Image 1 (cartoon, helix red, strand yellow):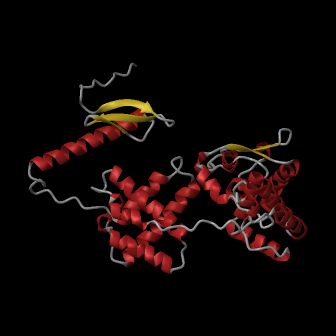
Image 2 (cartoon, one colour):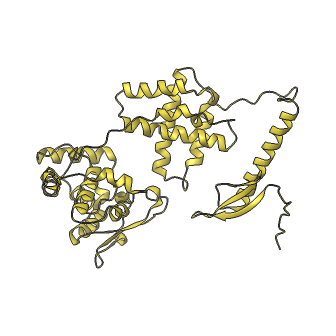
Image 3 (spheres, helix red, strand yellow):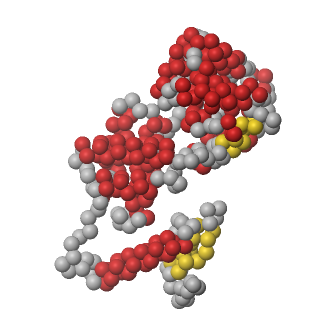
Length: 361
């Protein structure tokens, strides 16, 4: 059965072409090309038709002097309803499950706070209200980076609502809202710099006093800089000992952060740790809280500063970069979206110079 092609009238809205890495459809609307945000032709046509129909209704209402007689005013959605639709929108494959859950939790926290301030509808969000929310988070002890991360999904939720026609305008597009973002202090070079010697001391102590599965987890993390969520989904096929490579690949119902799959160079000892961890990971609790408690128990025994498993990832990046690897290559191995993120990972080891010998005069 042949599919009939839609006939287009010159100058009228129509699907135009697929562009970019995601091969997303664009449409010709009001004399310009706009993205429709989907690679699926049927979904793109539906969005285009909805947009045209909405514009026609708005134009008809404007011609009649605004609101049609007898027609009830369109109410903005409740924040709870908007959050539910946004959570559905964020589900994989748009975001990873971990990111979607984090966004949902942060949005829920904001809505609960807004309701305690008698704000329940999307059109009641103002700059004054958001400034009050930022102040309440900082007064509760949240750092600038945490507050900025809390604002990100809220901002994205309203942008989503505007694109879907749920609200007439996005309040965060107002120029005042740009000042909500707090200034994050740049990390000090020695804020937390686990030197290679300190990492080795921690790993040796872990081998003596913890379960072999935990010891293998810490060793493979310190030797490959993978995230703990990636470690939980490793299997024996991911490591190639002959080539010395650890491959981070998607698994059923799981994918890595940002959908960035990569190959990481590893030593023979790290490759052996991967296999040991995969074989015995079911013998220990691998939730974030349990791993944190185990690290603190070991580092106290080794008389090391307080750190988390993610700091082993930073230590690996710092050591590899100090050994001569370019910042761009380290960024690829870490699975970062941009080099700027990697720059924040790099630390100067405590044993290194103060830098005076580099001064020109």
